[in-house]
Amino acid sequence: VSIALTATQNGAAVTNYVKVLTLLKDDEGKVRGAHVQDTLTGEEWDIKAHAVVNATGPFTDSIRLMDDPKKQKICVPAAGVHAVLPDHFSPNRMGLIVPKTSDGRVLFFLPWENGTLAGTTDSESEITMLPEPTKQEVDFIIDEANRYLAKDVTRNDVKSAWSGIRPLVKDPRHQDGSTSKISREHVVEVSDSNMVTIAGGKWTTYRRMAQDAIDKLVETVPEIKSKASPCKTREVGIIGADRIGEVCNKKFDNITITLREKYHLDKAIAEHLMRNYGTRALQIAEIEKDGFLDRKPTDHPR
Image (cartoon, rainbow, N blue to C red; front, side, top):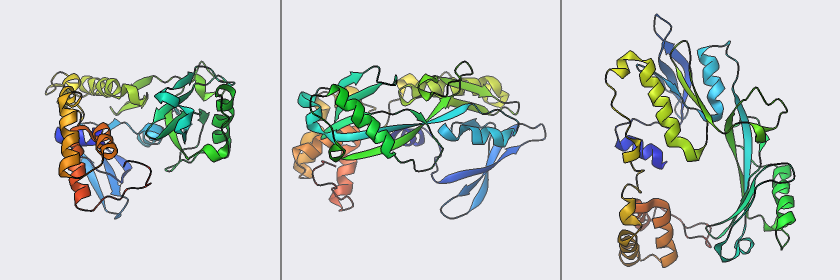
């Protein structure tokens, strides 16, 4: 959400719950936009553009095939499950990483909020809008945890669990079906219709991915190349962290004090808002003041 808000702050128009139905092409077969639908109201309309970037994560291939039905799929969706355990599994705020589990994956236990974040699994998955962790995946985390932790983990220790889908890029050199051996790097592809696809990658490299995709777009589309300026991602802070130097020092303490004194928040909640929303913590507190927020669960400062 912060990335989307930062984009709007820099002039982007952002929509949610909007689905691409078809791609729009000009007389030369170049992609020049998309016909989309508001999935909440059913309204449809055209979005026209000089170029289109396909940055749709696990849905990458559905857009690529919309552009060219003969394309070979490049995306392998992989499920990654995390579980939250009680905080006594990460005592003294210390974490643990297991570089190679019984089946070659990486497993970690990290202090997170008021608990311990444990994960993650890595297995090929179907693409769904609301992925859910399976019993087998949660059991894998528990079984592996019990190989390394002094205190046994049981199903009753699992406070919550969730699943996400990684859009891994297929590597033809690995045919054993193991998603753990598929590259986590990203690739940029330009189709015959000039649609740019950015696929693969991970959250920790999203700026590099965006820069590579836009650089390729500028190189491909003359109308954009003539107006392009050098990439400035290094100078653009994410909203809420755009003055991070101040936030990390006196600003952090000052805003925390303001949250406690002006909005009558306890110390844990004030610090939680600062850690999660940075300089926008005061705006969140304003929403809370108007009674629009509800604290759930009660043992959690959010």
